[in-house]
Image (cartoon, rainbow, N blue to C red):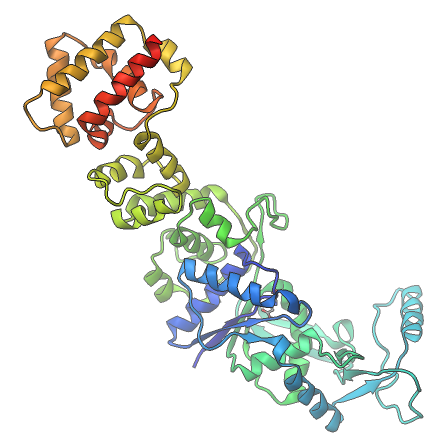
Length: 464
Ligand code: GLU
């Protein structure tokens, strides 16, 4: 059974790079009817781990990812790791190293002066002498001193490391007994039954160390997929300003989760030149071996484009729900569908959508000066008065945009007016600016009474 995981360190929130690896891991597990697990790597930062797990679960919930089993917290597994340290000590695959801080510093300085890579020289590997007093030893694992460590990465192909370039007998337990990063990651991945480890390629250099641990403990080595980074458009590391922020910020900015996931799956993976992927398509088409070998560039315009696409195609009830987050409640509005259709083509985010909806639904508190100067005079005010009266005496019911269009045309014919005499003044009186969706849509959404009230208020305001 395919088992994957997402293993964040508890920074307190989930950022989009993390969400992308989580998505890849999730899809691969679910596609294969496998398991997708969550592990919080909190050996150093215990303090934040519960909050971090909550933040991750909140973000997962928002985008629709779910994990199996209980969350694994590394900070709760120290006893387990200790057993494995002991096992390696018993099997003489690891040993106590009594090197003091001063000795280590001296070794480093010496190596630096010879322009060598700082590395432990193995002085306690086969130590049989008298144990130095007053030193709490660390535990080091016996790593291969020469030869290569290779594995076939699902994205990068065969990857080989020269043992002497990258390894030394690295520490697996510190002097205070706490285990180290690469040691616990390998143990957890093995015990959690990982078959496929999909993670950022910033972890590639950790992999040979983890392989040493797997081998020493006789664990099966999973398949690794090291995913190239997401860079900013100028090819640099993605910063917060570029978009590397908390996933929930995207919700606050009015992105739909399906747009974000669609954006993320395409950052580093493709299927021909297809851009739009439903969740079902992601599941059926995604394969981590098709992940691009090179880094991908974050493109905010593309994300907006995708978001606009998903807004255009979302159901009325969905958009109604989303708008609530932005303090717009149109659930009981009798022209809900007309309002949504009038705006869905124009909004790139739900935040924009909500602002546009508010500008129609709320009585304008002020009127755009420039527009007033440009379009409002004695004539236009008079036209508005007449128009308002005309609506009031209409015998036909006025509900739909088409009904308002008809009566407006009749009105213009009767008074020999052109649309330009009426459309902008009417817009300004209704929404406060000369910019709005189709004026007939606005009329229909507001209804005759509200329209008349707004016209009246406008005239009063202008006449002072
Ligand atoms: N905890 C690591 C991180 O947040 C990920 C480790 C892994 O995926 O192996 O970058």
